[in-house]
Image (cartoon, rainbow, N blue to C red; front, side, top):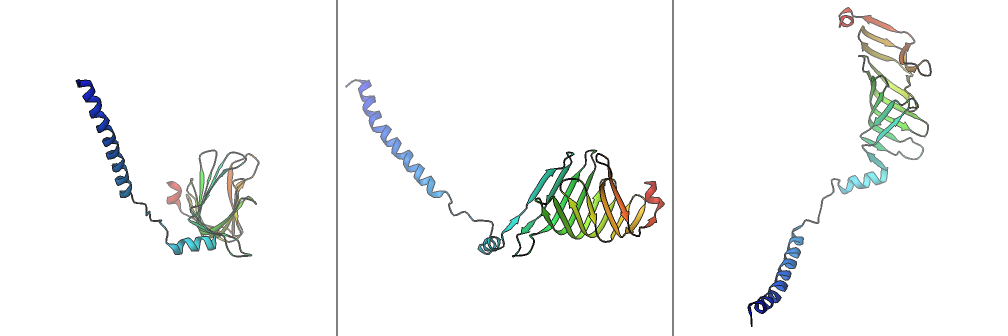
Length: 199
């Protein structure tokens, strides 16, 4: 038997043995993979979410007809029982204007109605503008289709010229393509602080 024939006979034995070893290794490795992956929610959490139809970290993004940015998010939304509106906790919003300015909105809870084009911020509402005005109130109604909002109750705030309060506040455009203005009405009181105005 020449050298070539011996090599062929040797490979006929070696190759099947190698294949068997490789297959055994694959099965041994597959046993070491952890298939019991834990879910980051307890069974009770899952049941509560299913029963109450809870959504976590919802995020609404859109643009107005003029192309301004509208963003509203929350940590948790509950569907609510029959006859009740769904509610969201830690409700936050942002209006991005075309000129680069923005209005930020924060509240304890709220409600968004894309079908009606509205969002309502409820409880410890804080309205902050990029030009240095901060207003607090209990309730704020806003639009999702344009940068517009109003507070039916009293507001307190601070700005570049001092502190103020008013019975009501509105923001939006006075003309179709005009800039966004903030209007305070119903008994406006202003404490002028020259040091703030100088800044």
